[in-house]
Length: 230
Image (cartoon, rainbow, N blue to C red; front, side):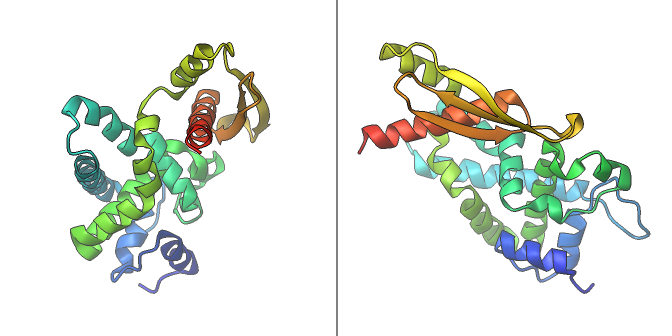
């Protein structure tokens, strides 16, 4: 097939050019899409989930050779879980490239976390079939590199860690507040702020208040680490 403009633009954002663009088209076709000859992507999603898991497990072992399995497990779960996969998908604006049925599209499917996460895994499966393990590994490590670097913080309960930090310094509890709410009820997006008594603060956006609070707390912990380490 001749690749569409949307597919080529997504390839550019992804940083990988397919030899068989049909694989990419398949990966970006949701089961709600009804079209003669169209293939939905659940088999590619199944494959991509396994490829992602292998690459991330290998990266974690290499990054921390002395870590016990009990230490590595929460890091692994943080890196391959649906919320983080959806974050990566949003960074790639994957939602703009997927084929959805009308009802799913009208209900905000292009922004739904489970759909974005599943679609990203399908894309990874397609890359594996198109270019082999080395191509899939290079792509995943490129997309996940900053998240792998900060995984120790991400794998912890960031809100609890921030609370412990603040209370140990006599600052009381971190204060969370809603800055903005955007979108209809079925596709709402929350922007939350966390602020310490010291004046340090961060904001983050997600599709639930708790997720936005966790992201804001994580960002603030990273800021604190930068400040304290110079």
